[in-house]
Length: 271
Ligand code: 2NE
Image (cartoon, rainbow, N blue to C red; front, side, top):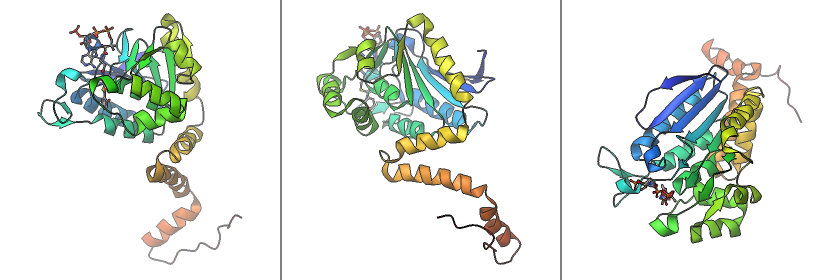
């Protein structure tokens, strides 16, 4: 795969390939790719671009280097009310990123080498698929560092590994090997570190060749009940997208524009 730079940022790298794969890399290896509010703002921007770009069919999220995928929020910029950025305002914009990843109608693959820890673990949890290198280490640290990753971080993890295991992972703040993660269904597969990118690209290429609408509807269907009304909104929005493309819907729009009554009699009522 030939990667072309897509946009330039300070704390992430954003690339695309001609065949429709976007790759977003958290680029703070000196901190095990811990994120600041700026990192998250940049991730929000790149994910929004990848979502909007009709040529992109799949998004890979990863971390720079082979020591860490992401080690969560940068504790050095954690203030009293959240993570503090250049504007000196404390915030937890990670939560915005989690929601964006859920509604992005394209598969997101977490490509994990090294540590996926704390809020960084949550980022792989919320990704549609995870491919792990054999050096990957998974875990939460919130009960040690005094934090909580409610919602997707905890709830969706429990959907994946079950309530007992998820509570163990959060309450005890221990670390798990790639093999252990594989056993609990937390990752899709484990490959030798040197094969990680190839294995991820192989799946990305397979996904890009699949029906984008089928993948979109599948993702929305998988998310619907966990996401409550927001999930129904996404699934309903997808139905509306398809409906807008029918002659029946266009008749309503065209009748309004032509200042006449719509004639829906020509359209079937399916059982
Ligand atoms: C990941 C772990 C276990 C790795 O340990 P080790 O011994 O292999 O590496 P080391 O030396 O700890 O880390 C290398 C450098 O990265 C920095 C370290 O301070 C160190 O820097 P220097 O001492 O060389 O200058 N670093 C690593 N993680 C960092 C972090 N999160 N913030 C700032 N600097 C970090 C070990 O590094 C570790 O336990 N890291 C902390 C993991 C953690 O507690 N993350 C935050 C969880 S809370 C969260 O992410 C969160 C949430 O719960 C809810 C919402 C939003 C965020």
